[in-house]
Length: 355
Image 1 (spheres, rainbow, N blue to C red):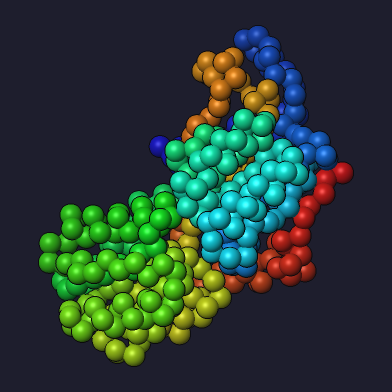
Image 2 (cartoon, rainbow, N blue to C red):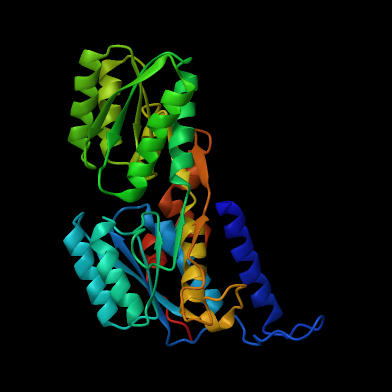
């Protein structure tokens, strides 16, 4: 259903662009004669936590492409540290600049309920991506299917183990999408692999040393440990280093991608990487954000527009890919930036001014 919604939304927007606001000529005229485009003085902001993390870079590239096509401006921002209050502060700073909309991946869901609701009450559109604040009034959520990611990870690891042994999870509690991945991994193992046990679920909190220590300690108790799943790309680096030292063939898999993880994958130190399609996450996120900011440009078949309510309230699946040694070269960020016409990563992350 989520993929269907994503496809429909993308097609509607694409056809609107192609039509350039022409009126329907069959069965009566449409009430909407506007083009799906904005103005150069409209600014949209991407807000991330830990802005130097490579994952966000292709997301912003997708947002930036959408802004170019829509004729609006955008910028990349957020906080440089993994701290909920720091990201809230950066969101407040963005809001003070009166943007048309903010595309945000909340570090902690509860911390952003009030700020997001306040932004929307002030007329600033807000769409979440990657991680969510589901109890807020955010107008749409764009992500890979986190439960599907966890299930795919479980099947990939457990099938490679031959259906027997022990597995463990390195968790980052508090972040909505990470919890969904871990929970789905565990439930899939328990439901589909009766001869494999989940023997540890450790809070490593995106810390490499914690990941290393957790794998070492778990292996001492369970020498049949055959797989490690992590919803992010920091703790798993330590976990994979521990697995390599143990030399028992423990399979380490995470949902993330960066140069370090790709190098480890190619060298055989990482079993696999699951990559959400970051570009489409940013592209579909920006299209959703634009519609949220311009409800007058669409005609949903519901009463919400007439009642001045959120016309969408949808979740969109941006897809995922399992990266292998053979495909790893497609995912290096610097190569990707150059492949789509930027001089380097910094150029890709630069603000875009329409006009």
